[in-house]
Image 1 (cartoon, rainbow, N blue to C red):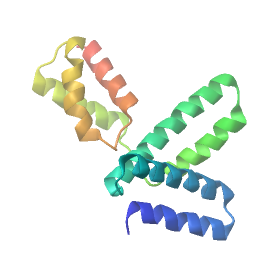
Image 2 (cartoon, one colour; image 1 turned 90 degrees about the vertical axis):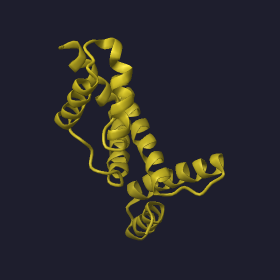
Image 3 (spheres, one colour; image 1 turned 60 degrees about the horizontal axis):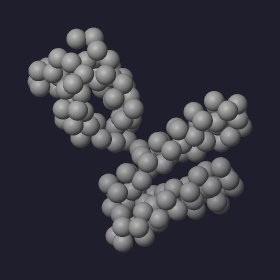
Length: 149
């Protein structure tokens, strides 16, 4: 079963089970997937669906931060619930320590000693952590490691 089919099946199960939060979140995910398929004029495979899910998760994280900054706790809670559902379809995310270990190895491999080489490090690191770590976290880790050298 493809990832898209899994989301569709889970939405049907949520409808039958009366779980409106999950039903609505999965509906938004399916709409985003469909929109991407229409825009690119191709049927997305699991990798394409995963990219859409990561984009949706990033949007939710940004919305949560904005709502919390504005004092809209009820909206932030709603976004957090949706993010939790989206993350259940994503692969296990890497922790900060794992990202630091990979980044340190790449920095040593490339011989980068200052922030000027950050682009090189990010260019080599991002493909290795794609789908497993948030880009903002990776950027922060690399920046900290290069600053401390």
